[in-house]
Length: 292
Image (cartoon, rainbow, N blue to C red; front, side, top):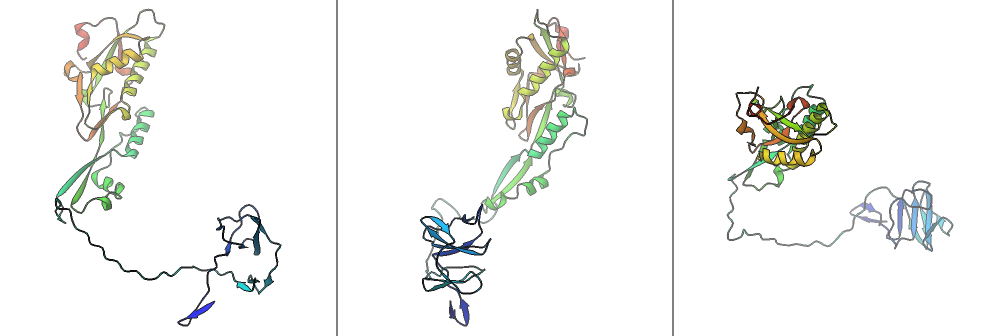
C-alpha cells in the first residue's frame, strides 16, 4: 500500500486475483490470466496456487490476518473495490472539414418518408383470421404510436433529416371483410373423374388463394394480376379443378376490375377468402361472369 495526498491506496497485483468458484473449489468461475500464480477463492475464502496448470490449496505461505497472506516476502490482501491504471496524459487536435461538394446546413431540409408495417399489427390480423373473424378488425398503429415504436431511429438520422412514419395497412381481398369492389367469388369447374367432394374443393381453393397472398410474397404498393393467381391455382390444384375464373360478388361491380388490383404505397395485400367465396360450376357461361 502507499499514501498520496493523504489518501491510502492499495497496489493491484498482476499475479494474484480473487473471484468466485465455478463447479468446484479448484475451478475459477471467471478466466484468470496465464500470468497469475495466486487465486483467492471468494466462495470458500481459500488461497490457491497454480502448480503445473492446476490450482492447488497446498502451498507454503504465512497468514497475515483475515484473508491476507505473505508469499515470497510480499503481502497480498483481498479488497473489495475498483482498480485503475494511470496513463500519462496525451493531448491531440482533431480538425474536421466538410467535403467540397457538401454544404453544412443545420436546418431540416430533407423529409424521409418511412413506411412501417408493425409486427404487432400483423400478429393481430393473423390471430383475427385464425379465429374466423369473431373479434373486431385489428387497426394499424397511427403515426404517433409508430414514432414511439421507432424512437431508436431518430438519433441515427442526419441533422437535416426529418423522418415521417407512415403506417402500412392491409388491403383485404375477396372475402366479406374486403371493400365491396374487391369482394369476389371464385368459380371453378371440377376435374372430371376426381373423388373429391365439392366442400373439399372449395376449402382447398380458398386455402391456396390465401397462401398466394402470404405477406412475404408482396411489397407495399404492389399490383395483383388474376392471370398469375389463376396459373398458380392450376399448378397447385391440378388434381382438383380444370378451370377457374374470378367474378364480382355483386352485380353492381365490373368483372374486369378484378383482373388487376393495385395497392397504395401504404398498403399491402391480404386475402381473407373462405370456402363461402368459392362456387362449383359446370361450364363458363356468360351468366357466370356477373355478380349476384
